[in-house]
Length: 351
Image 1 (spheres, rainbow, N blue to C red):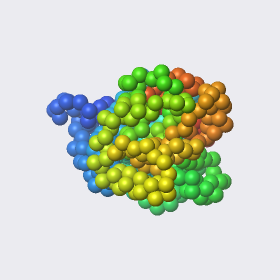
Image 2 (cartoon, rainbow, N blue to C red):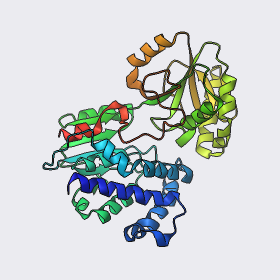
Image 3 (cartoon, helix red, strand yellow):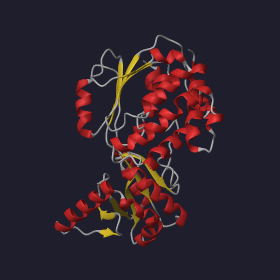
Image 4 (tube, one colour):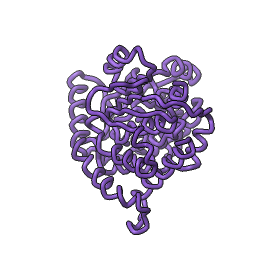
């Protein structure tokens, strides 16, 4: 199975995922798509019952995102930037997080597209969707059967590791996997930098960056920098379309809890009934809370963000910061947008 075969298989996976975001009739599906369509549709619905944070809307958003990413053109553009050499495959152990639907998808694709085998230990919070997609890949390219292994126990007989977790679990991963080539991911957050020139539409789109997946992702905006004397009412007005998020029980519980804790501590807050704004110098805000901080000099802020770059996953701005992400796009990364800025594919190709 060469690189062209692998690219074609993932292109076919993209075609399969696109079936769930269109009005395509079942009769129009290919035989392979028909074989797995009902199973995957059932798992979409089942995943909501196994993780209360997984709404069907968010699960389908994740699927739609991957459907848009996995095109033949994107796969070619991504892989053309590397030197692929066909060699004996290694086994790469993957430990996934469970905070978002299909959160381990990029690592899954990266290992297989690089020509290596994968042994994957999934979080119990997100273990319904990816195995069906793996079965689909095997249906398209049967050689993948010997390349994909899911495990409920500890990883074993592996040559390298990619593990994602909290800052606490990362310390455990570092110690446990220290003798193997590894990528260990920790907590990171997205931030936004505003200067008052943003349009109302851009600020509305920022609401998507903040509230998609309830703010649980490493690409969810948890902190906003604004210039001194910025009118925060502009932002409150723009994000008000997200107010229905408070109807989600777990989110509301977090909102009520954090509000109570802050008020009992006499901490000053801004709030609009569904999100709390707290002035704070740190990056990682609790669920239903957005930290904000004033800045006086943009260049000084740029210097600070560079020094503290290991705390941020991406930055949203109106091109104020180099390599900024457009408003509303943090949850729609491309294949070449690597978590923590670590080039996963380069790491795998050097094994």
